[in-house]
Image (cartoon, rainbow, N blue to C red; front, side, top):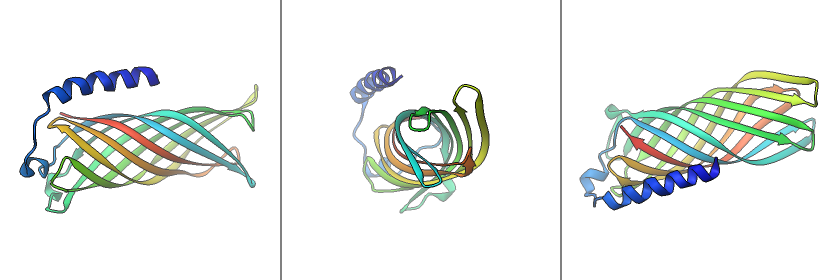
Length: 195
C-alpha cells in the first residue's frame, strides 16, 4: 500500500506542478469549497494496561471528505468541516494481541489566511472508534467507544484544485477495550483535491 500511495502522489504531482500557476494575493486568500482527501498516517499507537505500556509504530491510511464554510471567511481565516476515516491494523507483540482499529471522526478546522500558498490550521475531532482485539487463538474483544482529538498542520496550494497537507494529531479512544486504554500520536501526509 505504501508503494502504491507514493507512486500515486509522484505521478499526480508531476502533472499538477507542470500546470501550476502563479497565485496573486487575492487568489490565495480566497479559500476553496468541497474537497476529498486521502492520506498516509505515520502513527504511534499507545496501549496501556495497569501500568504496562505497549507502543506500536505502524503506518496506516486516512480518507476524508469536507467543505469550507464560506459564511465564516474573514481576513484572518476560514472554518472548514470534514468527516474522516482512519484505518489501523497492527500487532502488539508484547501482549500477543492483533488489533484492528477504525476511527470515524467529525472534524472542525480553522485555516489561517497568510496571503500565500501556505495555510496553517488547527483542528478538533470528535467521533467513534471501533476496536477489535484478537487475544490469542480463541478469544477476541470488540468495542465501540467515543473518540476525540486535537491537531495542527499546514497545507501548501499547488494549484487551484490541489493541496498537500502535512499535520499532527493526538487522539484518544474513551474507555477501555479488554482492559487497554488506547491513544494515538499521528503525523499525517495528505493530498487534498477540490471538486
